[in-house]
Image (cartoon, rainbow, N blue to C red; front, side, top):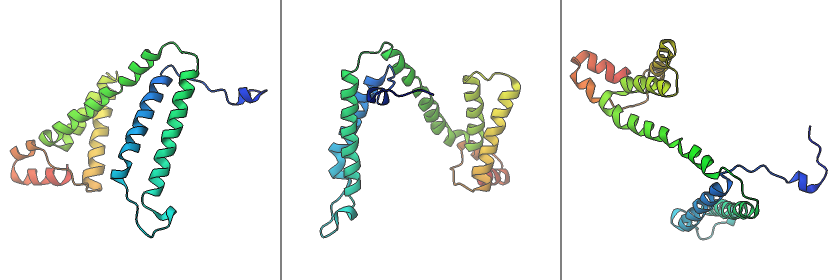
Length: 179
């Protein structure tokens, strides 16, 4: 257990190397929301302030902007931390999975929900380093279970794939309904 001796110790914070970049991006995002606030909310005549549709979004976005500016100020006046761009590159690496998801969304209408989900679950497991047949089979099985739960049991309406058009009528109807 750490002992706090002074107020300075109490308010001391650990800063990550990408803190300044995050503070700038967060302030820019808050300013973007603030600039667009009037077009997204309305003020209604003869309505109490707290009941106004625009009141709480306005309070939230203004406070978000103020705290983002304070965060940026605190980051600017703090000593520089080495490794800022290493941290930012680490953040950007996560965009790979946005790409994977976009490919899945583009290919699911062609290959169908079942085939696309099983294939992408297996491919992502392989991409993450799970290369044994047992783990790849588990990934494929989890993809199948996901389809089974969402499409068959919960009856979530997911468009069928173009690949289903080549199936015989009875099987095509079954696949479109349940898979």
